[in-house]
Image (cartoon, rainbow, N blue to C red; front, side):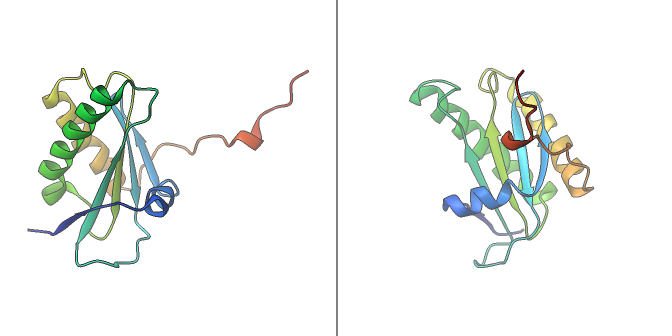
Length: 130
């Protein structure tokens, strides 16, 4: 069974944003394959939910659900030696847990195959207003 650790440093979350991005209705999965193994863990995960989602009670509930999902799915479907970050989306807290589990399995398989979503446009790439 692989050893799983939690991402705690902001720099690791920011680094995951440069990796593969797979969006689903309840969350966005970021997978950073270019991780220097600094710990004894085989893979790491992190969860983040912004204030746009709701108050602290809603955000904490969503984070608990995501941590439970990741602890269940990563030992079998996770990418060894990679960082996995789940970003909560609006409506993710009300989604059925089994549906989230299925979406996470699909997202992890797409990330393992290297089939991420196209990169988002950067703020500097916007067209000037007329």
